[in-house]
Length: 98
Image (cartoon, rainbow, N blue to C red; front, side, top):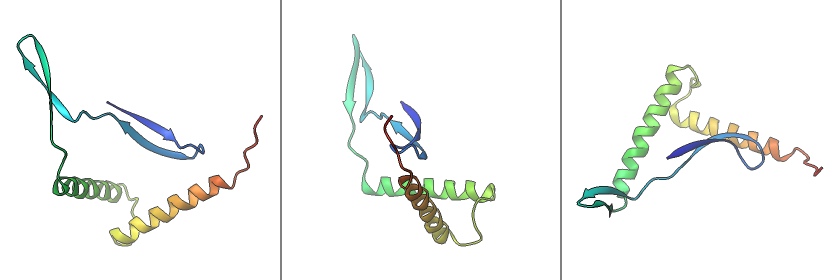
């Protein structure tokens, strides 16, 4: 189960997902179901998932024309810097209790 949260704690726009993921499967058995826990993913499985997600995100950004003319590593640094600048800009806003 997942839901999208659009704002961070300082009301900055930071869309992200919150997800509940079971660490096993429910197996039917006579009289009901039984929960079978699964082992955690290996380091290799996590790294493969990260590579696939990174490739797909970069391909989508490229398709939409959202990537600068730089290489992927420079692009990542550019977006990280932009994100940090946005975050710093929000912290400069004076918030007064009502």
